[in-house]
Structures are given as C-alpha cells and as structure tokens.
View 1 (cartoon, rainbow, N blue to C red):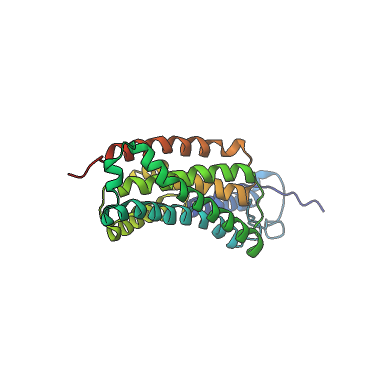
View 2: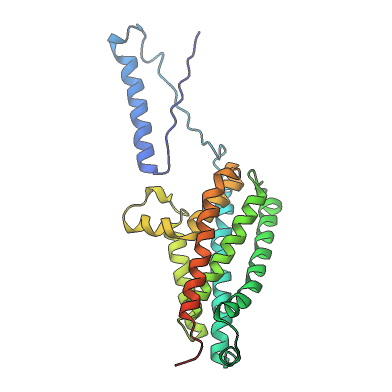
Length: 261
C-alpha cells in the first residue's frame, strides 16, 4: 500500500504563529481527504494523515543545545564591561588618575592601555567557556571555530569599550557596577534573541535589538555551536561588531576630560 509523505516546513520563531500555521496545514489535509470532489474515493478515517513535528537544528528537543550557546554572550558582556568600568572609576576615587592629567599621554592612548588587559581576560574566559561547553555539556562546535574566535575578539573589544564609555560618565565604583549591570543585562535578556528572535520583535524593541552588539554575537554563538554556520554566514556579525569598536572609542575619547572640572 502506498503511503505518500508530505513535508510542511513552518518557521517557529513566533511560537503562536507557528502553531496556528501548523493547525491550518492539518485542517487543509483533513478537508482534502473529506471532500468528495478530490476524486480519490477514499474513506477519511482509514486514510487520515499522521503529523509528526521535527526540529531542524535540535531534533531531540534538548534545552541544553539552546541554553549553553546562549551563556557566553551574557557573561562576555556583563563581566568585561563591569571590570573595565571599575578600572577607570577606581583611579578617579583613589586620585591616581592625576598621573594621566599631568602627563602628555593622549586620551585614546590611556583608554587603549586600560582596555587591552581586559580584552585578554575576556578571551581567556571565552576559551574556558568553550572547553566547558564541549567537555562538560557535550555540545560540539559544528561551525567555524576560528570565525567564532574572531567574532569573540571583536565582541569582547566592544563590551570593554562599552565599559569605557560608562566609566567616563560616573565617578563612583558602586555606581559604575550598578549602571553597567543594568545597561548590559536588560537589553541582552530582552532584545538580543535570548528569549525570542529579534525578527519577532516590533517597534522600539526591534530597533534596540537591531543595534545591540549581543544580538550579533548571540547569532554567531548559536550558529557556530548548534546550526553549523560557516564563515560566510557569520560575516554580517563580523562587520557589525567591527563597526561598533571605533564608535565606542570615539565616544570614550570625547567624553574623557584631560582634567577635572
């Protein structure tokens, strides 16, 4: 007996919409079998279709494949940004920033000198997270590891640059920690694709998600670990993060005064 199979691929990014489309497909199938004009002369109960849901990138539907690649984007924006902000603000509180005021050191030179050590620390954290993901949780890197490492370097440079921007506007370590935590965590959790894809957002929420750096690193992390994306499919993430770096440097340089008022 012939058993024809029909595949209907539904984008489940918006779960409510995806389930609605799935129900429509099933309804169309049932209607086609029950309609006498189809010429099949089939009895609907006997030839009723069976639907089986399958997931393209996570066939077993295990949450670990979605959760583990989402952790590095959060940690690599929260911790490096806080450390970077505190490093500059601490000098303001202790008064050691006077060395910067009285020397001919340029503002950009001072900021880059403060940033480089924390970029190194951020990359070390990245390699530790990758080892834990692969060894402890058993999540293989299906895509390009070298491309993911390059994107991580750009991302860590961006997140530490964000800490630099915040540090130029505050003068207290406590304020630096709280402000940096709020500024980094809220957009990352709500608008970067962690809870729902950015494509399903609307209005100002979608605008924030589109310009937020974590959105692009989240795409790269999930793509490299779970989807097996190659270098060519991750190039848009490289371009956006590379453009963020000079913008943050320019803002930090302009906001950092050569002397206190």
